[in-house]
Image (cartoon, rainbow, N blue to C red):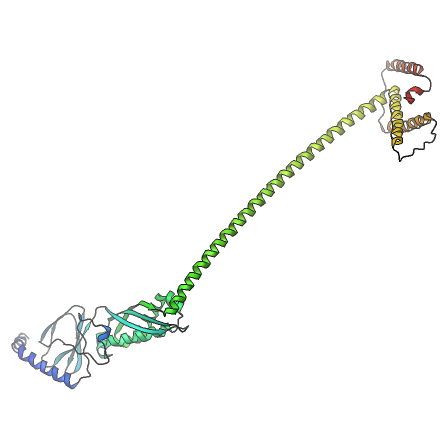
Amino acid sequence: MSLFVSKSLRSSTTAGLLQRALHTSSARLNGSRQYGSRSGQPSTASSFSTLPRRTSLPVNTVVKFVPQQEAWVVERMGRFARILEPGLAILIPFLDRISYTQSLKEVAVEIPTQSAITMDNVTLELDGVLYYRVVDPYKASYGVANAEFSIMQLAQTTMRAEIGQMTLDTTLAERNTLNHNIVQAINHASESWGIACLRYEIRDIHPPAKVVEAMHSQVSAERSKRAQILESEGERQAAINVAEGAKQAQILASEAIKAEQINRALGEAEAIRQTAFAEAQAIERVARAISESEAGEMAAGLHVAQQYVEAFGNIAKEANTIVVPASANDAASMVSQAMAVFSSITANNKKLMPKQPTPPPHQPGRTRKSAETIEHNDAEHGSGGFGSEQIGH
């Protein structure tokens, strides 16, 4: 093997010149063949065309060193032989030829500005950047004539198709979704090319001038609407707060009035109760005094007769009242009627009242003395129990 390498090195110059001549002649005969480009020579969109691009390829010098992140496709006698990986590579002179060099690095390709029509018939001007990488050097060399140019065209058509399925508002609001859909569509279409689209970024979206003006007007109207809504919400909240305050004030005032009325009613009820209790005590004492002695009954009868006569006197004061007693000329009959009423009431009360206990032995003498005193008083005021002067008075 070492002998073969030494002989090859001796004739390296002659082999290089011969291979260059063969390469030049084959390129002239087959102008439609396209060769890959070396890494480190990025191209722009303006440099691509439908014709294949010719670039210089490494010459077979028997011993070659493949750079890192590159793959060299070797053909032997015009047929695919192998793919050289980074590092040392030994080639057979005159038989092996490096036909394609593919860079395995991530490549950024600028997508030129293009027109696209949205679902709502708005024409947009868009441009972007496509990032791709060669994952299969064999497919990238033999599956497509110009991989970079083809993927650029695919990106443009895919972007037009995706925008045609979206409205203007959706396109502007969901740019990430649009980028994701474009990447998925490109990867599905370029699977046989040995190329993987890593990502796609839309840089600028230019709507028509009238659409931009309408969008600005819409934004202004939306901001004005929000301002009016906020202002109305503030006024509404203020009115609610005022109403709530008035409501609470009325509730507190009504509660105060209620408490005042309750206190007044309780006071009046307590006063009535105390008055009734006092009257009941007075009546009870009067009744007890009347029931304990006959003189008390006579005094009560006299008081009733006085009230009876006074009542007739008050009635007679009214100009529209006519009093017709049973005997208008006899006042004594009026008194006797009053006494009869009182006697009837007293008799009924005695029936209802419980019997009094028997008085002790010394009580009869005291009773006779009280009776004598009453008779003496009657004698002084005249016969009949009630003097005519007292009744007339």
